[in-house]
Length: 161
Image (tube, rainbow, N blue to C red; front, side, top):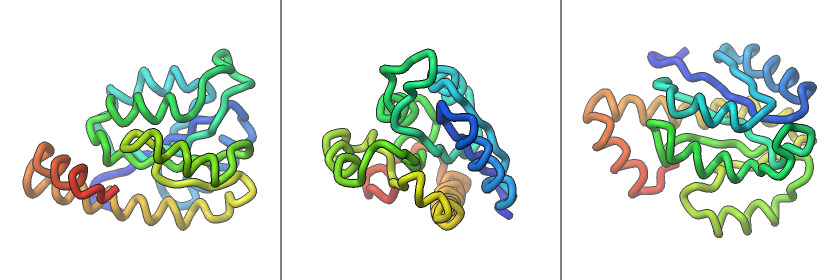
C-alpha cells in the first residue's frame, strides 16, 4: 500500500464501536490499535515512531475517566507524537454535533481534531481514512527527502493538515 506503514488508532469507550472501526480499518489493509481508555493511548502516543491516524470519540463517560473529552487527547497527542501538527485526528462521535465541533475547533486552533464524522456516518470512514493516509504518505516523503524538522515546519506553517 504505502512505503511507510500507517497505523490507525481508535479511541472510544464503547467496545462495539472499536470492533466496527477495527473491522473497517483492517479490511482497508491498515494496522489497527484500539483503546477504551484515552489515558492509556496518551502514554503510548509519545513512544510511537510510526505514522498514526487517530479516530477519536468525544466523551468517555463509560471509562475510568468520565470527565475526559476527546479534545483533551487531541491537544496532548499533537504535542507528544513526533508528527506534531500533522497527526490527523478524525472525531467520530455520537454526542457532539458539527456546529459544536466547528466552534471548538476554532477555539482549539492547531490542536483541534482535523475531521468530523457523526457515528451515524461511519460508512464514510474508509473514504476519510484514505484521504488522510494519502496526506500522511506525502508528509513522510517530505521527511525522507528533507528531514523531519523541515517537513514539520513546511506542513505546520502552511497548515496543510
